[in-house]
Image 1: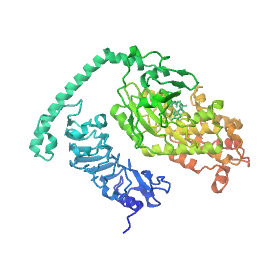
Image 2 (image 1 turned 90 degrees about the vertical axis):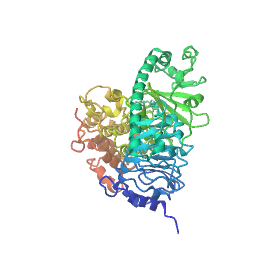
Image 3 (image 1 turned 120 degrees about the horizontal axis):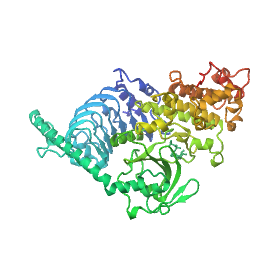
Image 4 (image 1 turned 90 degrees about the horizontal axis):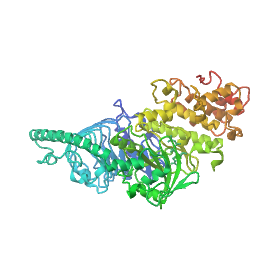
Length: 636
Ligand SMILES: Nc1ncnc2c1ncn2[C@@H]1O[C@H](COP(=O)(O)OP(=O)(O)OP(=O)(O)O)[C@@H](O)[C@H]1O
């Protein structure tokens, strides 16, 4: 008897899933053909996030609108390589599914569903490799099952915002900051939280008679209420002390609004750190001034890793060997830092990132940590402090698209030719589309798409960074600096970004790549409606068309029709009227059709519809692309 293939196993599982209308799940139609993993371990099916040795390792079926009771997870038991499973952000109801058939799982995410009821105490007893469990934002009730703590490798358990009650089992207490139980009004015995009633312990009586349970609940509610009042009083008192006391003074000294590199060294580096500035200058902690009275600043926060399977390190390890200031953006500065025996990473300081409280921030970071796409730079870890946040990402050796396009002699890379530019735009559009798919609840899934946030890997594959930050950035700051918030719809009084605001940013980026012009130069002129798209329109209208395409690309022959099609994509995305602006799907579809060279089937006829009189120079083609009627005009 041969084992079923992973393809068959997953298809069978998929057939048991119910979509938003209660019928079969349309989004996973793709699973009807091919296999979940390629021979080279590239995931092929939606929801399959990681493959290894030809097997599915990470299965992420999030935000698909799944309905009804949880699927039978024992159907997945033949997937022997499966280590991470997510059914999060759906509308699954009823009891926790039986997870005992998947004993090798390391990561299990069931957050943001409508699960309810008590969880049997031994539900997780077989999961001996479990590292992370997220059951938050459901309606689970009753005692917290002690079997969650079966695995010695467990480090993060999120039970927040359910209706659990009673004490936190001993085994979970050791997780410290890795345990999240807030939003469960009747949970007691957490450090810093309400104490548990003396006896009897609710955890020992999960099936006790409802009479004694009610008495116990009443006692717990009273204790929680008193405890809550005391805690509030305590926090107020503590804040008073902090404001006047030495801790507050020390923080103000090292972090208080200072933005030069030297001040940062004092706070986040070990004594031997030397920070190289990109202009070749160097500062040392000594040059930056002595540590306040020899006092060593303690940073209470630690790096929290959101990536599965990444080596762990501390911020000090990262900054001990070498750290280089890469530049200073709207949120703070970015440093390149290299682990002694490891890869180069980037630490970016974010100020004005107080759009979410600590727990929501952590949850958002975990969500970002689960995103996997070749055109997204993963968030590796973060550090949360009230005053500022640090995000750690991988370092990209070819720097940013902005640097290559506008760095001139400062860029060591040759100018980008048309095929590279096309590859970059395709990657950017794919990365953006992935964000749209994965983060359907965000109004602006990227929010800050611009050429300095498009980094290039060694083969010029683009990777997006600084994405999906809108939920955690202070709203006023977002409105001031984030690129999607500069779209025309936001400029109006009380205007807000919408889902097409990112499309506008994509359009500006496309035009920037084609023209080689720096968009900010056009915005700085300060005239309403003046942006790169406006400039492109004015150039072609005034028949000054030779200027439209970047000089470095103008030598390209035989691809003019394709360039013009891309120009049209840029202008379609930069339509000021949101209703007439293209949607992301359309932009992506048009970009995907583009080729490195004109010719072949449809591309000739489509290109020629933009080009008049047989003149196929880029200039004439650009003029045709902007002809009234072909593309919406960009009036102020
Ligand atoms: N992971 C990375 N690898 C290589 N270079 C990077 C990386 N992250 C950022 N950079 C570069 O470092 C410089 C500073 O980046 P930073 O993100 O701090 O500012 P910015 O992108 O100019 O502005 P903003 O704060 O608005 O995003 C930029 O040139 C950016 O392209």
